Length: 265
Image (cartoon, rainbow, N blue to C red; front, side, top):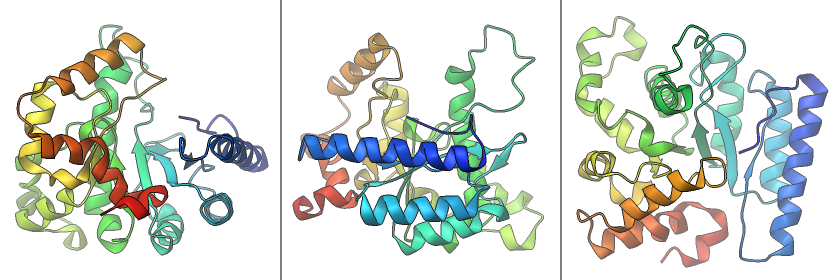
């Protein structure tokens, strides 16, 4: 899952362009087999992001874009006002947006027993999703189809707790009722990458509309053994009917990815 956060300015823009053109060329060499999500520069670079969104979605026919849970040296999450121009552009395109966790900036003091990409990644996804909800970024850009990686991190598990924001929220603009909070959470999409185990599946399938859940594997970034273990767990999971399996495995993707629009029915 390429990102260009190790570069800045024109170098980041150029690398994003190279990655996207390479992915488009690979797709074109194998018609019907591959699609790709476009890589963007840092969302702080609004001009560069908007330029790449228009090129990738308009010219290269990408399926959507990839964004990370936070950007910059601080923990600047996706609901930050600085990112509003990018969200406005994505909403115009009715874009599919995959939100993948980034490594949080404050893990230096963690003991080695707390492996960040195991422990912190799910929480980073949740933090960013919460920021999108309570900054009203999600509400104000309803045509963006935002996919949360790894079954939404911890979000489905703590839905009831998030409902207490109805009481705790002190900012008038971010105050929402429990029903509004739950409805907005259900409007996200969720992939199953590394989340095939019973606990995550039970939580997800009991709360999230099934056509908002998509298969994911985390290949090739996760260790193959872990990917196979999670995929096997999903295949042997007894809590889903064949209809639900078909929805998760391919029908949900047919509904939102441009390359499958003619198969949506």
